[in-house]
Length: 137
Image (tube, rainbow, N blue to C red):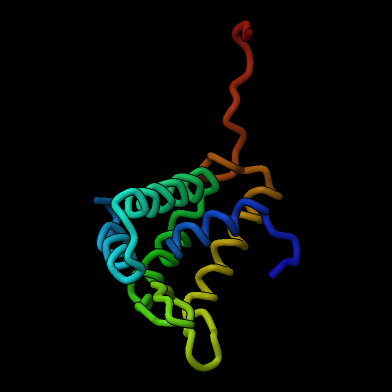
């Protein structure tokens, strides 16, 4: 994996994986709220973060990588206590502290970075979406 990362990618992944949605993450956000004793606004922010991540992934043609990451996070997250605080996470807090979804995060990051470098954002095949002719603006 390249050492250059899209700066906002980390923010999206962290927001969406830490934090009534569609795509299966509504239950995740409820579990997070209950584990961390959060409020309704926090649950809504969690759902919004998943929605935003899904939208960005679609723009970059990385929906399958996003889906794999969210599926992993939903399946692997547990409520764990650290220093008298609870957190809902896919990171093993006891033991080696590895993230059980590292591969999926790396795959999404690589996809987003690759699409950005290729400049094929928003097209399914990387082709230019502009049309020629016909008196544009």
